[in-house]
Image 1: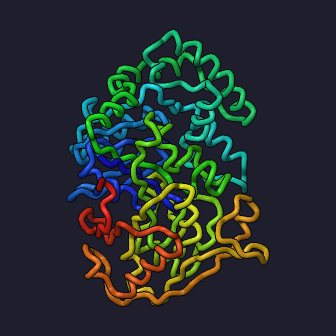
Image 2: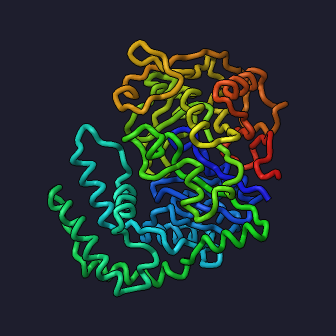
Length: 429
């Protein structure tokens, strides 16, 4: 059986939640492999709207959800999310959710460090969510992380906290922020242990057995390629690798299990937080896109910056992300826009580029080179076949395919799950 990996092809918030939900009905297992609770997926199921941050989206379809070791887990946020969806009628139990026992934890200290450092940056803020994701990844690499498995070993926890707090309390003092007490933090973790440990296991073994049994596995990415810590618009990025190559390390499977890679992109472009955005619109068109698309961050609640589709950016994401097919979402938001623009490259200090260079100043100075294409007067909203689309909308899609050098294999025409046009089944053998 073919597996499928879904990643964002822009700066996140592309509508991955709906696409994952739609594909999860055909999968057996859905796996989160990177990121933390700074990710946000909104799922509309009947008259219920689920806003998920850590829980794999497949849980709402009764599929087994797995949180891999590549995810940094805030146990308080996770348990609160489980309670929240339970209040909506979705029970999450150790039978439906498994967590990698070697996954690192996000503790209150991490959020304090995150906020203190962001405040110290002043005008050069990165725009983090302040949830401690970056500091938690730093601890993982520095080998001082507290992991899920450590909750089962109080004696290990004791000396690990000494090392942990020696580092972080020193930083907090230097930033003029309150420090943390070891006894209180230890008691918090020991209180969380019996609530979290029933979900924990070596998920790499479960995934190996599932593959051997021929199960279909859907790997669900968070954020997007242009927020990748290596390949994104650094330093305005997340703290993990978001490309499909991270699936193997972040889930504990071999690279040959990644399967087909589907990239998600909006028919226009948005971004939350700081950082370069060459095709951003500050005019009435930008406001219209934001209002029609209801562009507010699922996690942050902040308005998203809106702009034209940046084909040069998505082409770059296709290449470094390993994307084989593109899912284009929110096409209906462009209904009635007379003239559409597509970014095809950048002018940077008089030189032309087909990709966004890694230099911070060059990215800040990038000016889009546009191609204009006629819009359409008809409606695409709710279309479920190409035959229902206006001819000019099809032309727009075809031009995007040419520019990003990747076929559009799935099209979303509204937030409703079934308002989807499938051109190529990513699960097909």
